[in-house]
Length: 174
Ligand code: PNS
Image 1 (cartoon, rainbow, N blue to C red):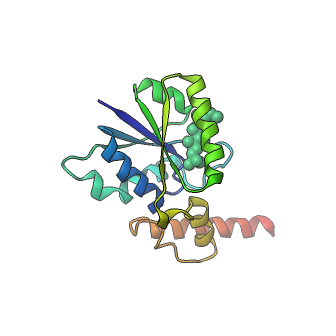
Image 2: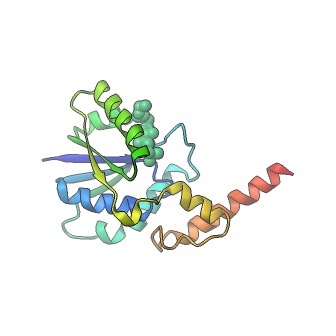
């Protein structure tokens, strides 16, 4: 049985992530979508919120009889989780060349720490090439419409959190 893990911040999950998840789930027997923390980019949403957003955004896929997607969260090193669950493959999405440099380095460092950790890259679909969680958050913070980029099931939560975040920033600057 081939088990793949798609690790990421998912802060929040976008249609770009969902596309990679749906395609990767077809390639492997089981796909674990793993919410982690990138210390370089402190998250806006808590791990629980990010897991909940993933579950709600993927509710249709998760309710299928032949569903092979699992959502999980881990607060430590990714490679420790990978080893513990005896996974075979790491899945990552690539949008543009600038993603490649970072992802190439991550793939190498993960394989250096555990030689069996192979990374497979899936190219983003054209419609998601420009899409990022950071862009979604910025648009929401300035009152823009994010409904084309994330599931309708999480749009209101993102708007609410973005408003709270902006209000806090305004207070801090006073
Ligand atoms: O969606 P992102 O922000 O590109 O995901 C990056 C992530 C969360 C996969 C990466 O930062 C990560 O693996 N974090 C956990 C800590 C870790 O294992 N780092 C790798 C060694 S530098």
